[in-house]
Image 1 (spheres, rainbow, N blue to C red):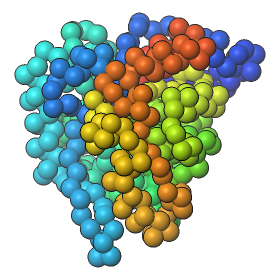
Image 2 (image 1 turned 90 degrees about the vertical axis):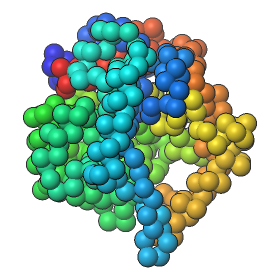
Image 3 (image 1 turned 60 degrees about the horizontal axis):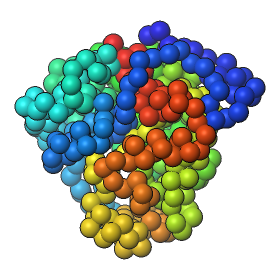
Image 4 (image 1 turned 135 degrees about the vertical axis):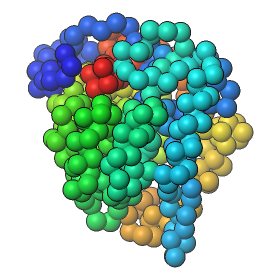
Length: 368
């Protein structure tokens, strides 16, 4: 873990003495190409090649919708469903020359195709049985989120009226994740979950996909305190494509995404930021069918949004007007983001880190 503890404070000192656009030096790494901090296996694996990905954190979990007695929609990931899901994903990849199940960060670039690091977006499939961590690790699991919006047996979620952090089971689970070399992911967690996990973890961790709360004040977004905690441990914050958590402006633009990237650089350093998708690889499918008409496309999210408002969850007092940045709701989004960073004045070496080098580093630091 050669770069595990290069200091965020030293990076901030360098930033203070140089333009924000990227005159900060971090240790050189081989060119990692495009690394997506959160994606999914597409129906056509050929899309992976078209997207230009060298690696991706690949959510293979399957979710079922359930309803609370009051009708509020919730989403659950069971052990049985996800045991089958990870096997099915691994089987698809083993039969392809376009992507492969990656065990270590150092697997990136060692063979042709995209290195896929399998992830569950919640600890729900683990339940209360920590032995399942080793079980799923044996099936290829390499990245694990503590929670998805709501509280789990491991940790407090972001979208709860009463915020909480790691549970005793979550603390023990984090220790086991560290031992097994599973990358901890605090996306969708409360601030307390993020900060405590960063403090306790013996390895770097990631907030694989999300946005910055200082720009858009919502509990799904990451606070500056949590950015600092993750960056200080050598971790990475991935900025994603969900436009209603990037801006409240009525028309979302690429500049809004760039603003979140710049904010992470300002708070955590150039080594702390990456890019994530969180939509199907080709784009949010309903919006594509609608020709990226956000006014129509956002309607599919409003039932859930209003249900969160009715529960009194902070951040849902307003009503979103869009879902995607139209220019980025496409298979070539990574190339488009790279060009946008170039146009915005970022240096070539820093663009390489943002587009993939930082995620490749943390995957190598944690997984080997």
